[in-house]
Image (cartoon, rainbow, N blue to C red):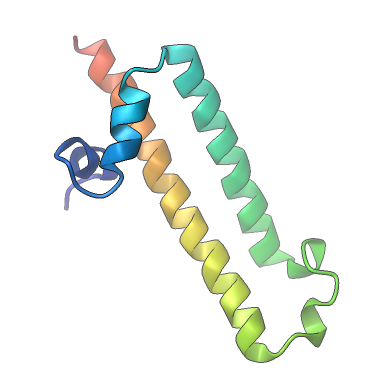
Length: 96
């Protein structure tokens, strides 16, 4: 299975993200990785404790609760893919 970095570099999913960040400096890429990891942690916390994000979580319909959790999980997957792309760009630069 190809990594998100390899797919993006080949012009697939998130290729625009790859193209934009390819020209960014190392400092900005590292900062972006930190910010994405912070967002991942927030989303993981919301899944573990939905009341920390949605005060009336238990009052929501079961479908709404599932939708929130599913959305947060999808965000985590996407953010991890973006982190992988950024880490791939940094490794690519080490080998140049």
